Image (cartoon, rainbow, N blue to C red; front, side, top):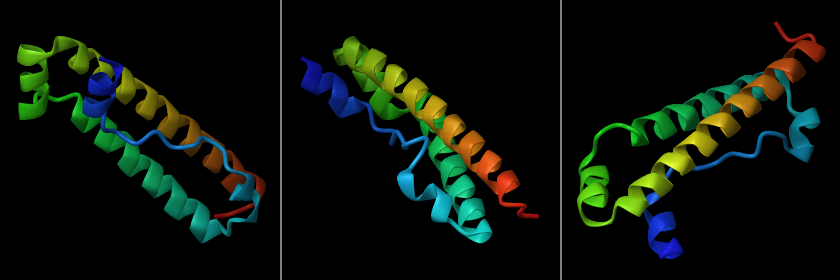
Amino acid sequence: MAIAIQGCATPHVVESKKISDNRLSCSEIVAQIEEADRFEKQARDERKVTGTNVAAAVFFWPALIGTYANTEEAIDAARERKQHLTTLHEKKGCS
């Protein structure tokens, strides 16, 4: 049953901090922030009423719960990533 729940949980959960982050240039940091924005938006879009979510609710409601739990985790991770990168951007004196 856990496999079926995970199968419906599609948003990607990003790592909030990476060892290589300190080596990023200012423009790379900005690109990483934009990527985290895209991941957060994708996770939020998964929460909307979609055909997959409706089917999950009708045929296997625990899968819908798994999707919502995963979207929350993905949103939180993207926010943490953006905050980490913004702090790094400021520490490096990027404009």
